[in-house]
Length: 294
Image (cartoon, rainbow, N blue to C red; front, top):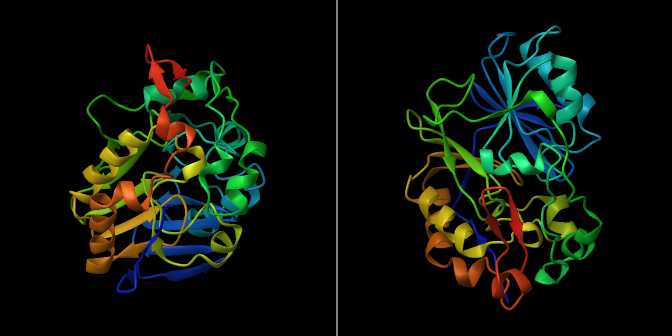
């Protein structure tokens, strides 16, 4: 049975309330909580031409995202790019509509492209990973691909992030084959996506109350736990100062790093749902295109 790692000594990242669920956590970083998931805005307030949206939430998230963008960057603001950490339904819910509205490219790791160009579906979620109602309901969550057509672009080979100078993308698979996290060495800021998260995503109660805890990736949608463990270890080795994940509040400081280190060290005990199907046999990517099912 898996257990969470509580972060009793953690420092929540400094927050400036922007209203409507949005928070500034650094001069050029803000995030918006959308029901069960976060989206991130990169860029200095008022700079209507030089900002980037990271992930796009649920299908119902468009008006909230556009509202925060207008408030933060200007009424006519549109990003220079949309970056996707991965293609799960709660991270791409409005990407088609926003990319068309703003007429901007969408960047993702090439291993995510089959799920973003209409080619392939993700493996089905595992509702038997434990933890609560969200896991049990996971078979109802969409797994099928979307088709971004000509707007879809690969992230640059040199690991730079379009529109985000000073940042680099890191391949952090496990939760998805082309999952990426974004890292800025200058201030040790980490946009982790779902490589690890700071709340329990399997429980509807924990999703609602957002108790600050260090967790591995959402269990019901993670098909390769060995890769997920390697990714958490790689991110912990960076010793980040500030993290914002796809689910949960932003966190900072020594307590956060200690929690992340403990998660990396005790990943099998604390994150992996023992005996479930993707633990017994991971779903892996074949020929760089789609999952090989167990």
